[in-house]
Length: 462
Ligand code: BES
Ligand code: ZN
Image (cartoon, rainbow, N blue to C red; front, side, top):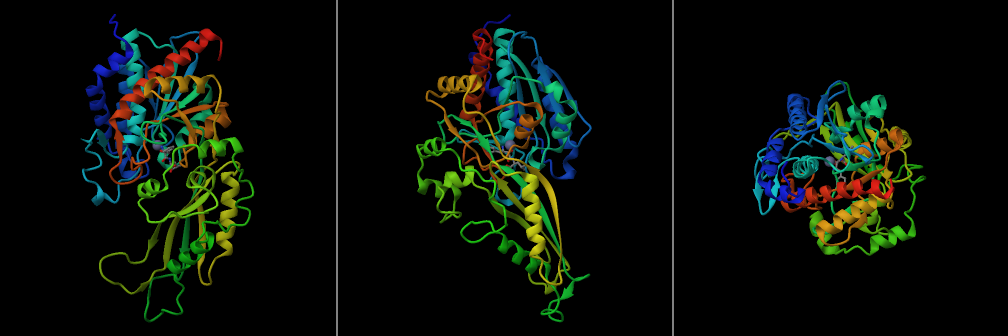
């Protein structure tokens, strides 16, 4: 049995850990595009095989959509069990021309690894495997029990894992969930996230005439579904960021005063933030700070409108149909189901003459808050302090991770959201990257977190 400390093992194996991450990043596992189905299976098998190689019992679970990867190491009787969660699917890569290097050919530049999924979430998911391997090699055992579930549909609504949790939730029983799919408030500032927004993602389909029309011969009489979508969308949110859907704000809760006060204490430079956004002006309701707007206020955005002619040159057509993708981000205590009803009713009320609108829910998830105190949060704070040399901050995120709320609702499990992404990692955009420093610190902090959680058993704190 070798006796190398897990942290030394992790340091000595950095190069190989990075090579493994690159191998995973080369698989174009875009969950929302059906032509990548085989890539999804390849990515799932890669993770299963890596889990087996480090000493977990591991399997892929097919059945509902893209496969899940499940693994467990349960040889620490009397110790707590942590359920780890990550996702191996990634977002589409368009606009492809804006990538400096191809999205599925990982490239290391300036201490970052560039590839689709580098930060979201392959790099973060791999920190779990590398931390477990470091402990198992260094000490021959883990200081706690681990279960890990990695899904392939996080970026498109998570239907498969939701079905699995409702049918086989008992198998995932644990003391707490740990998610590495979030970020740090800023470089060098370790962060525990305490809330995620929910989401209602919809599609509005507009039908005008039964067939495309010449816009000269019929312009002025033929109903135009693209114009119609523009009207409807413009009526859903005013220029000050107020969403004009009756009842939409009814359940929005203002965070407690001490929470808002703690956000005000976070370092915040408006010019730097604007530069990070890359826009001259920030939009939204000015009575709320930018952090409040993204962390504790709902919003509505259009992601794409399609229909008619968008090719080179000009074509004078009134298209017969058009579609818009519109989503809303939700905050406590809004509920996805209710918000979708309000949204659909309002859209249908706004239907212009001569147009048929259909509103479809693509996916919906409630917002979630996780505890800010308790033994697991203390263990995370301790691990982060030791690893980053400074205290962790508590923050929320404007993003969504659907399963976190499901774990809470279905299994009664709380989550520690401790992630390694940075605000400028270009998630969902061209040139996504992951900081290698954070990759290696994330592995170290995870090792320390599990050691601290393992020690809780001795203290009788769980
Ligand atoms: N990892 C992100 C969400 C995230 C990013 C949380 C940074 C906290 C900090 C996640 O993969 C994601 O993008 N989720 C989607 C979910 C949706 C498609 C249901 C999102 O938020 O758009
Ligand atoms: Zn993610």
